Image (cartoon, rainbow, N blue to C red; front, top):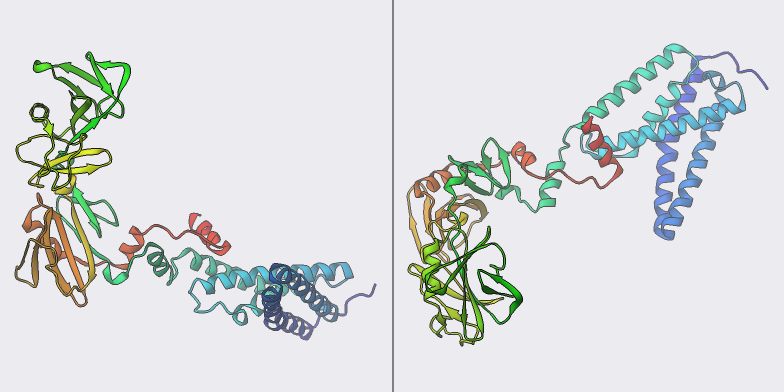
Length: 439
């Protein structure tokens, strides 16, 4: 075993230049060859080319350290020179992958191997040089670059917001934001009461209970099951809960979800049930008014033996298909359930006819147009090629809706980042970035 010659700066320069050439020349060539092999022979070809490429790089590094062995602390023996080659290869590839991740995130504007190929290999060889001053210099540069890369990877990259917008199907031009006094956003929450979608009252007491009545006829009852002495129909919404006998032979049933009555008419068990917002007395009147539905009550449809109707002041009915029956709701939607007080903000491409399907459409000054539909009303204003609309249920204040559409502004990048779901990591690099951000 021969001893290495005395260390000379020229040997260190030759070693670093040659090692850098492995990263800047050999690595890209091997990468292209591996991609070509993968295209021709699929995964087996890619793996084979990758293994052969690593062996070629290792051989080049062994040759390099054999010629410049006096420049490194690991040049005294063949075993130590092999260790040097393995360390430089591993460190260079790790640094190359790390640099690629930083570039691919968009901060350096490139993920080219020519930019990152030679630097990590030179630094890996530098920390193994014989002279301490060279080792410490290389180590200092390595630590500085690694720290800078970690800081950049922890930040939001320039293209990440666009990727999150694309994943959620959100167009930046149609993303608007507004804060509405007395309301809170329930989706696309930008923070501090600002939202870009649906809003509900802050006070839960301001949300009216839904009021719906259903009339359904059932053909069979549970054997040996009764409430207050009355059989219970199979599939009934009132099969459980409490009950009370009332004058006229009616049995009032109620649970946490529905309340109402079940009336025997011929061979049918006809149930009249309503949501908790429907007054008890109104349901009793409905049950007492039960009768076979007419063609007019079914909107022109042919009545069957399963169609029954009720007479409820202030309510209108529509036939239902599953189950067969009728559903009744207040003729005036104002005050009926959360929908009557919900406010929605959205933006869309400028429409040629903003009055389409409205029951009222009138200019309202300041470039606004007042729109009224069957169950909501609000305003629209045009910003360039975008129509911004703020619509609310019929119980919402018209002046509040008007001010909201005037206050609506395009959502900022920070607001969008806060509201959109985080991007799901799909690659090892993305998972590494998420891990760094969690530290």
